[in-house]
Length: 364
Ligand code: SF4
Ligand code: SF4
Ligand code: SF4
Image (cartoon, rainbow, N blue to C red; front, side):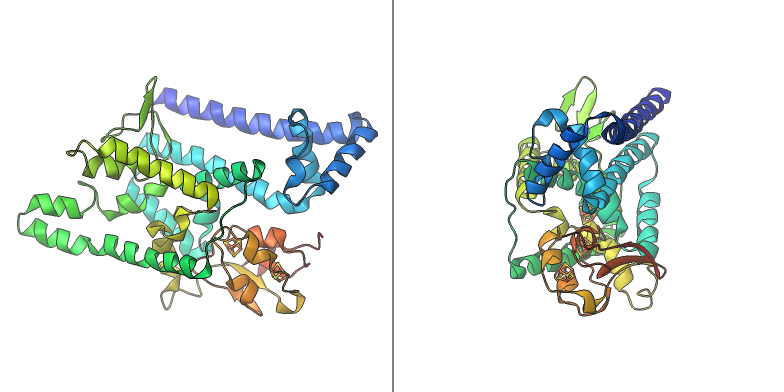
């Protein structure tokens, strides 16, 4: 345990130390040391690139590129900040798994946070969301276009979330009845993961890929004592363990999800039962006023350019369509991509208890 904790601390310190030192050093270098001609040349290249084209030029100056993007392109700051926070939470969640923080407590914390802050968990914390964001970043670096789902398919997928979540939650009742009648095999099957309850399934997006312990139902791969897995793989390995197909099907599942998430942004979030289960709390009458964190729009500033709907990773249309006021769709994950990319000053903003935390800028 002490070894794991020390390892975790060393990795965190290393990451944050190296990252912030690198950024600071490059800012300092850009401002003081590197010759101005070089910086101007980099700016010019950045100017010529497309919106996502700041990583176009030669790989050897990546640190300078990141710094220049940070300094010049303020619209990238939220994405960079979100990436850092997602990575930090990935380590925290890995540590929580190592020390064995109860699943019930985690779900309680996530739902509690959702009550007061909306779906911030999905936009800024969820490890599975983070993996999908890394794939999106990779796709953008490779300059591969994403697939935008049609409005109809997208809304069907979003509706499916309710069905999956309801099915998972409602299975508790027959499971309890079969359990009471002594038919434990069926009861165990219906609880989705004996001896746990459906909340184990709902917490699968929190699964760290790297496990320094042996998972109860096996892993995708074992490398020098480190096990590799993926969200929902534990369930596949458990339920199909007697068929001999569990591992191949787990690989097929992971490959399909990764491929789909590479082409379709936040693919799994479109029908994720966890996302809707935590969002639904705020949909209940009497709870809608609770979230302190809200995305809002000033319709008078909107030019209907459509950027917000194009950049939204889950293709939320309400931001574009709404004329004025708070965006309260359950699909919004508060990732703030629309706020950072909206080119009209003060048109979109994120407010915490009425106080503006972030707002769109006139950056075009
Ligand atoms: S919808 Fe599901 S997978 Fe997506 S970020 Fe939320 S919990 Fe994670
Ligand atoms: S990006 Fe901003 S200005 Fe453009 S349509 Fe959306 S809200 Fe309106
Ligand atoms: S509407 Fe904006 S904040 Fe909400 S998910 Fe889409 S891009 Fe993110």
